[in-house]
Image (cartoon, rainbow, N blue to C red; front, side):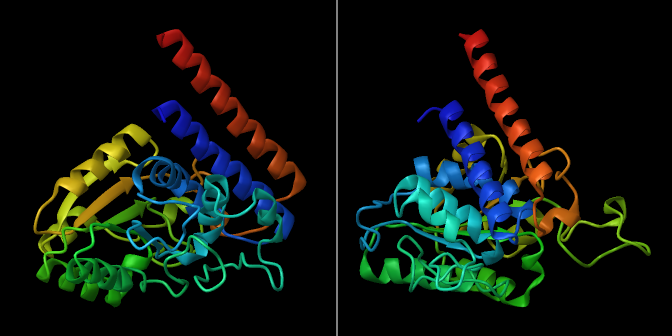
Length: 291
């Protein structure tokens, strides 16, 4: 797929997420919208996968460590053909396979159950090490949230991954600079008063022995360039610091921590979808003018 097609798929992930959270009356939004373009680039271009064989031994593995953003992963899995798009309507319902956090025992295409923050990188290390021991060529990818890398288990896993020189492991940091709670610099909850969850992540991960590259997480061409760099790295795991915007694609949600998780009203949904549709039309028009 070309970059315009991938960019439009990222917006399609956003549409599915917004409609699904609106219908369910609950769900995470901000951190899903920041990761939407990355989901599209991974599942429609980068990952070696086969939706018809979700347990294929040689598939690339993907772990969503920030498991509360599961609705974004569900959306792209459905779009890729792992299960019917219509099943998204069951999100967060009793007995649905699409719970608020991913359950690998229920849904095809999930390589790890996640939810408690900070616990996704450790199984990623295990998968990468297992691939080496078994002589398998698959790569393991782990998406991290910038708030969750405050967890100690992340740094224990980062240390071990570098010590074992796991060049087949790539972590992707969705660095949207905004978590739900914590690090307020003054009383009240104004967005302008909230500090980044973590400072200088590239420097920290390099200090742990990782190869680090940075990309624009909303520019799929630049993100895929970083993925290629990760695949070429030798004797070290790679961290891709993806610079993103929380709530990306919907102006009144962007950089607003209150949209981390909340219901969506009918009017909010209408306005949000109009903005995403307008962005797609503009992108197509610009592509045409370039030609």
